[in-house]
Length: 119
Image (cartoon, rainbow, N blue to C red; front, side, top):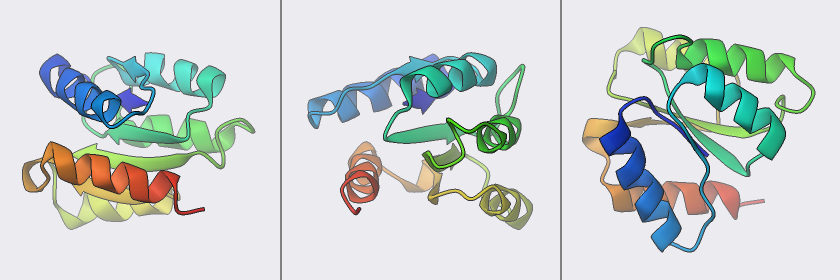
């Protein structure tokens, strides 16, 4: 599942993941993403931090508080690379942290495959 408010980024990532043979669900904001994640229970969530309505940290907090979401794998996806955001994301038991500007679509797909198939 990709929870990302920027449509062009969300669509490009979804296309790359689908081309790699995986099923993708998307959400344009944190509120919708949280609801979909609790219903769909995806193998992994790419979660943007900076979004309107509910940011990624809030989504992660509510996800972890819910029995259906407490163990879902989450990779925080953001353009922010400051220590505060990285530290805050890790306190929510994330799987990994990807900085958009430092990662190609191929890198992101590789990381998804690694996390999904590493169990």
